[in-house]
Length: 275
Image (tube, rainbow, N blue to C red):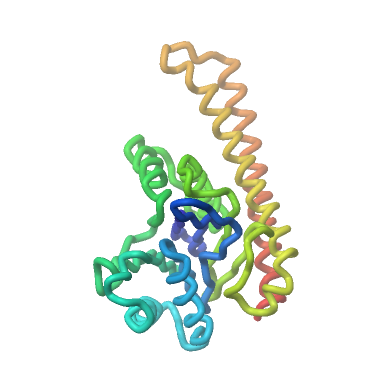
């Protein structure tokens, strides 16, 4: 089982997923459940043998698959490889630079446009609950820059950690500027990627560790600020609370700048490694 989260923003789109696969009696980790095409990212959830079969065929045909035809390609490939009675056992999330689409072959024969945000997998209910709560409360959901979009998506995927079928070993896909980028934890076993990336996965993972670490620190500062705002519930917000929130605000500003720099360095490195 798994969880994928995809979010589109002003600077492009990101998709994050965990690496866990589960059966009734065991669980596996370090699984690659996301593939980067030329200008799209696709992530799979459900039976790993079905996901792998589709990904294997996708890697063979990857040169001819683009954001414009990826949804049709996935449905055609599923029709070719998977018996109708088994199609409900696999789902895909397809992310282009401008939209997120759900591929649900057990239910629909065409892609479902999910707008700029969606999630699939066993942890998706936790993600949608967190997203819905924030939306209902009018809490800002930042996606004005690519780093903001990543930090927001990472926050919502973190909510899925409440699920016992979601682990904390992640893969990150980015669609920006008409191309894609892929990185993640070093424990993820990369099977579906260009040879240049496979050979340099440890280096890519170093960038991911730095990028995610900044986002996690930002989230920690936000939680601290929320704690200092909480006395307002009883009308007891005081100067010390205002001071602490100013400190956290300045810290988040600095961390946001660090994230912009770190993601820019990663993307520049990636473009030199993977043409």
